[in-house]
Image (tube, rainbow, N blue to C red; front, side, top):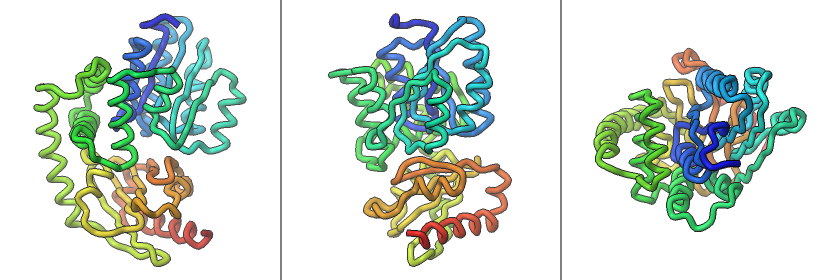
Length: 320
């Protein structure tokens, strides 16, 4: 593979440091010119597939690196259908807990190479897969990805970068600014004046959202577990929200207005598998944090949604 080969496409998760950092690694290490940033909203993924198809139609054959996105059957099928006339090789490098059906489907299709280690972040796995050694920029991306994805939130850049990314995705809605951030990070520029200006706006909005959310949480007990529900806006991340929450909890369910639901266990609750709870709701993720995407109208039907989640939690805890 030639460095900067235009036939190589990078596809990564747009909503967090791990996804943006993975895209930056692809750009830094492979010189990937064509970056597609997306998430688990179906319309976003379908648009990404359309974008990739456009590259294929103009280039003839492509190699695709997909990073920090869970291997989901509906995503695989839409990719296979959308690129049916495309000569392709797909490298799917991730760190989520994959379901067996999706994993087996990619094996049957025959054009996938997969690398997945749930103990690490996608950025860490990508660097390992690409054989990156002693690169200070990649090393910092790996540190920040672990700090954010595992809810440690101790590095001074982690929370500001998380605020900025979510602001660019959900408030500015700017792929151009996100890709500009990817390019900066790939060069080792993690913060500059432009970033600072954008972040100040992001932080102001996030702080107001967090303060309002923490005044209006809902508390439930399910099988003697303390469960807190938070209805909020996607300008904040789950970990940023919970960092400011003073109560002890077993599970926190963060429900965003855009239809995303995040399930987070308290740090020392190793007996709870968030990915299994999310799977029962139609999603997936990691043992310590997982998520599901629902239709936005379900978010507006708050009581019905809460009851559905509580029923799933009861069923999960009863079978433990």
